[in-house]
Length: 327
Ligand code: TXA
Ligand code: MG
Image 1 (cartoon, rainbow, N blue to C red):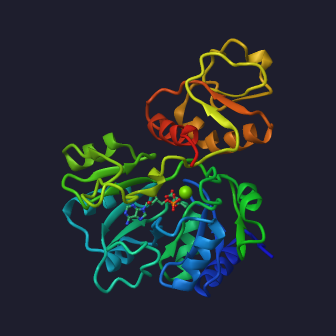
Image 2 (image 1 turned 90 degrees about the vertical axis):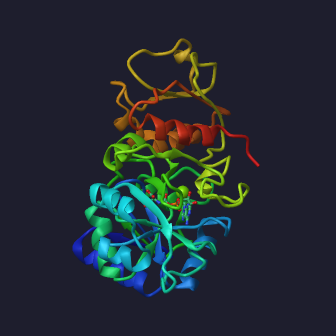
Image 3 (image 1 turned 30 degrees about the vertical axis):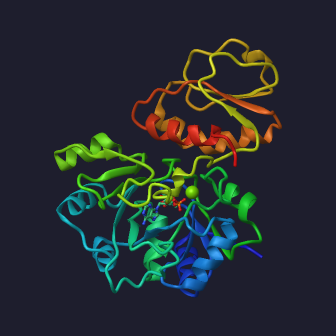
């Protein structure tokens, strides 16, 4: 049984208690819903991998309540400290070396000597992490390889019966996962684009960063450095056709902007993720819309071009993964 936990101060306290006791509890953050587990408890982490059906080599993001807590897990250099001060709490994850005495389970870091850290800005997430009093590993609260959940009902549809609790909060406001920035390289490397853009980070640091992916930390180029980088990810059941200039009969269509494509009247279902062409609005609706279009039963989801502006970078990154050949 998965307990529905109301998003109230008492509910947040209860969620924190459950996490501390080794249970799996999903909760909202500003980016997407996360599936939390005590990062220092290897049994809880193992249960989390099992619930997600996630390949065990995917390391998890560890969520903490403050910079002081983060610094107990990993040393921060000047650059990391600058971006942490500028963008935390918020949708940014930093990859750093673990301290030798870091209490986070090796399993949470998938055996790497590095750790991914984030302080979410969502007050509900903050209250829960604070109540737990331990670092919380929290991948997106979906089955591995599926679309990330931005609403409590998405979590229920993927994980009901497989986890201990879910905090029934509001929709995630940002809608795409945090930016991941690795300080294992100099200059640092952007491993996953998100709401904190490369431009914002470069402005803060006063110099360029690298845009990376596989092997970006100088490690084995075949190792999943940021396994969000696994080719097929965020995959709906339907085939995904990107940069659609027209809609073919019986396709499900994801629209963007005011100007509608030809053939729209033949769509099985069409949803506009931002009639005004705003990439922030589009990001917030991206994953729920993908789910809804997929549920229409169409064999193909056609997606109109989305400009690489602002959150457009992160949106297109996720869409390319959704469209990648399935293994
Ligand atoms: O917005 C988010 O970050 C959400 C919410 C819940 O906070 N969480 C999230 O976690 O997206 P997840 O597990 O779905 O994505 C974790 C990403 C993966 O691509 C993983 O490879 C990368 O973080 N990662 C974790 N630890 C890493 C490490 N030590 N080195 C490189 N990448 C790492
Ligand atoms: Mg994920």
